[in-house]
Image 1 (cartoon, rainbow, N blue to C red):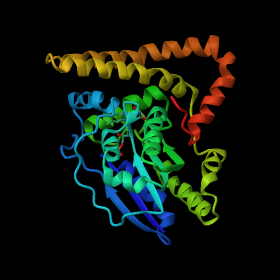
Image 2: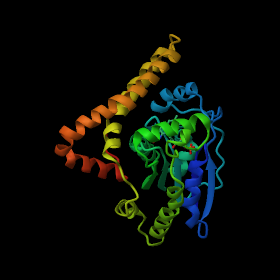
Image 3: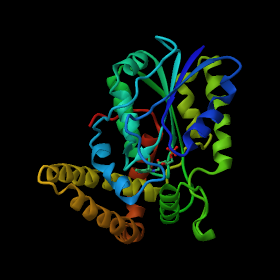
Image 4: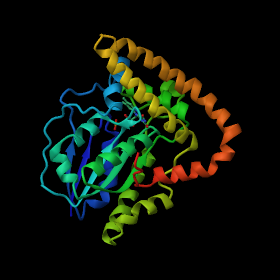
Length: 303
Ligand SMILES: Cc1cc2nc3c(=O)[nH]c(=O)nc-3n(C[C@H](O)[C@H](O)[C@H](O)COP(=O)(O)O)c2cc1C
């Protein structure tokens, strides 16, 4: 069996997840690892400015230049795509990967698995990736999202510390460790085993149901609530900032967006969530369950 694994990673977290996920495949599969490398690399650690600079193009899914991809084979039996969300969208290197005809050719007619290494908001990004795969003629068979399971506001603080210092450590020794926990990274090999068994049993088409039934994918209601609203606003901001570019005001509007993001995340969202939980949530439980089931699945709703 020929397996292609593509990924981009800054800290190495996603590569560690994929190493674990692919471990069970080592005996029976020939794995071709292809790393996506932007021609102008993003800094890591990030500066505050470079971090926000990445927002408009990422959200509007405007591909950037990447180094030529070297594939060992023309076709693969399975393609595993590892990626991370940026600003509720696929990271720009991942979007750029799908802009490559050489990659799309290998996705065409092939079974695809996506593996995500996120903070905790991957729903909108995965909708885009489902669309990329569909447009390339691939067949998504499974999605395995690994996240930081700490409370949203704590993990937001700790990931900023990680991204801005490059150190995956507890901020001030107080905040939780950022990123996907070591235990969860290790557990990715169990998912790999499940997927491999389902390939051997000819049941790969049902493996997502199995992953969900086994509790591998959990979507907190708070995250669903935020993601359903925030992406539309991010698109408006990204479009506005791109428009301001021609008059030389991009940097200024990115600063305004930065203030907006902090206020929205730490003040507006908690207030709205509290009001929603007290007054509305009991009446919307069925629709919440339906939406969670959809995002846990590999289906793509037409927009
Ligand atoms: C610019 C930027 C934006 C990010 N936005 C999100 C996001 O919207 N949702 C999320 O869950 N994680 C987000 N993250 C975290 C990443 O998905 C990822 O977990 C982290 O960058 C580590 O990935 P790595 O393997 O590339 O080091 C963001 C990270 C960066 C650098």
